[in-house]
Figure 1 (cartoon, helix red, strand yellow):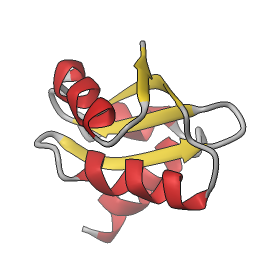
Figure 2 (cartoon, one colour):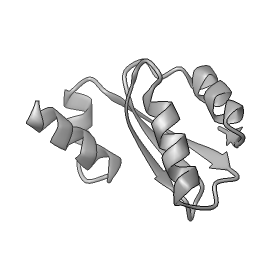
Figure 3 (cartoon, helix red, strand yellow):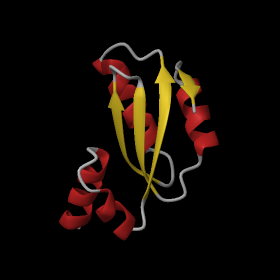
Amino acid sequence: IQTLLKSRKMAIKGEDTRQLKETGMEEKKVKVNGMTCNHCKMNVETNLKKLEGIDAVEVNLDTQGVTLIGNNIDLEKVKKTVESIGYKFEN
């Protein structure tokens, strides 16, 4: 389990995408506009982690980018979740 978690963290940081493929996980990158502070970041990360198929979320406030790691990530559900908490989803 620790190896899998480490692989996910490394993949989010872009350190080893090969390990991500080996775990059968996928990575999706989207933009979420309107995040201005760490509270916004935590709000988006917490809510997206609740979605089925998403195992890890990394938000970059500077770029408004969100990296999602998981299996069968449903971007429509991601969009609905992001917009339900007051942010604008872009893909």
